[in-house]
View 1 (cartoon, one colour):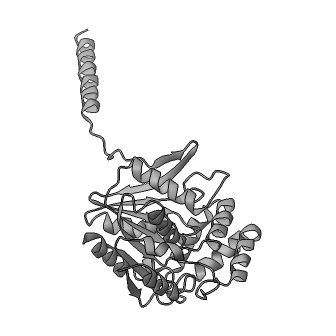
View 2 (tube, rainbow, N blue to C red):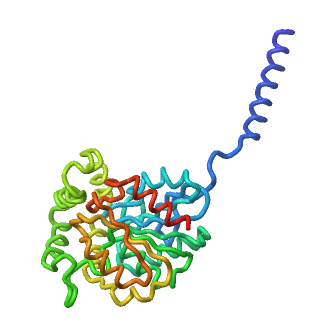
View 3 (tube, rainbow, N blue to C red):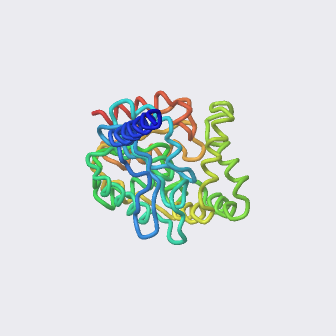
Length: 301
């Protein structure tokens, strides 16, 4: 009988200790949301790492915020809060039927920044994301943002226009759009293979990684958004930008020629170009150390 009583007492003590231990457990996370609702039934995926001055990063077409993996790793340990926003239709964000244009993307970014209560951010955009962030700062007068960084930006015009011979020929843009509707896997493979300055600049595993990210996008969204990019002309907007701007661009970029960087520099007052002498479109991988340290330097001043 004594043995039974002792066992009961021991069990009560054990249960009490477990209960006490559970109540004392501190949360491991910082409580930051991975998904943020921007309108009814539409949530965007957000990567939110580190503490300090915010750096907000917008991906290119048809990537997602996952493309900035090595910027999160670096800058998050350098005293910055690094926030990657995946645009609707891409990556892990919701993919609703509807509009996919630069007003929608800009509205979504503003909603995310408002909900996160972001101030004094450095806003960066790659490729199509470069056009998105230019549109954002001009539409919303740089709300929540004090600096702008453009990475291989598909701007001020991704396509050739009257008086602007620097973009992609319209026939090539239309062919690419058609391929999104008829042969998307081959298009993405060829598109990704053309990212680096030359074969071997990034590993085959890196190419495959980027290709896999691209394939996560909604087929509908990639067609609609690249069509909107074809029709977008930001040249009249450049003079409205009044915050510091750094233009990161690979001199061997085959997707968005270096001439686009020069046109951006001409159109944006007091902007400057950081040349990536060994890079094509994937400057964030091809010259990763330089990309990260230059972005750190720009964001610290």
